[in-house]
Length: 213
Ligand code: TMP
Image (tube, rainbow, N blue to C red; front, side, top):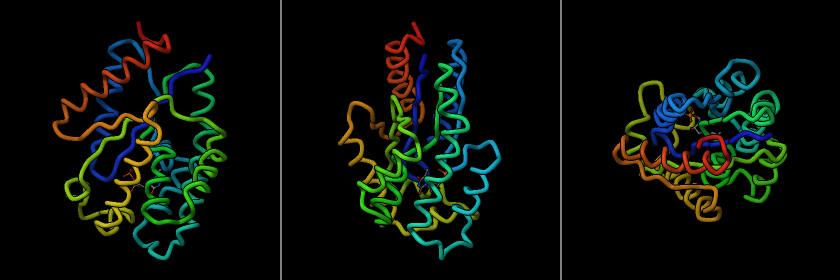
C-alpha cells in the first residue's frame, strides 16, 4: 500500500501555509487524516529543525551556496527517512510545505549553486526517490509576495534582493512547465478561489488513488 504525497511550492508570501491548513481541515471533514510537514526541518523538532535554524539565521550571511544546497538536502534526507517514507509506506496522506522543487528554484535558478542536473541528482539521493504525486505551485509576483512575507524578523532568504526572488519565480514556472502532469500552477489572487482550485485538484487525485470516493 502506498499513500498520497502532495507538496506545496511557491515564493515568499505565496500563502502556502494557510492553503495547507485549509486543505488539512477539508480532508479531515471528509474523514481523511493527514500528516503535515514543512521544509526545511519538518516542523517537529529534532535534527532537521536544527539545520533549519542554521539555514534561516540572518547572521549566517557568509554561508557558502554549495554548503547551503547540501544543508537543504541533509534536512530533506532526515525528514524523508524519519517521517515521509514510513508514512507513505503505511498508506497515509502526507502534505509538505516545500520539497525538491524549492531547491531547484532557490539554489538552482536563484543562486546557481550547482548545475540543475546536479541538483536533480542530489534531490533524488536525498529523497531516496520519494517523489510527490502532486505539486501545487502557488504563483505570486515577488514584489507582492515579499510585501506579505517581509516583516521585522525577515529570515536570511527573505532578505535577498527582488531580482533573486524573480529568478526563483521563473525557476518554479520552468519546473512546472517541464512536469505538467505533476505540477499544477495556481495563481495566488483571492485566497478562497485558490482554496477551491486546490481542493478540486487534490480531490481528483485522491479519488484516482482510491482514498476518496
Ligand atoms: P519558509 O518556511 O518561509 O518557506 O522558509 C523556508 C525558506 O527556505 C524559504 O525562503 C525558501 C528556502 N528554501 C530553499 O532555499 N531551498 C529549499 O530547498 C527549501 C526547502 C527552502
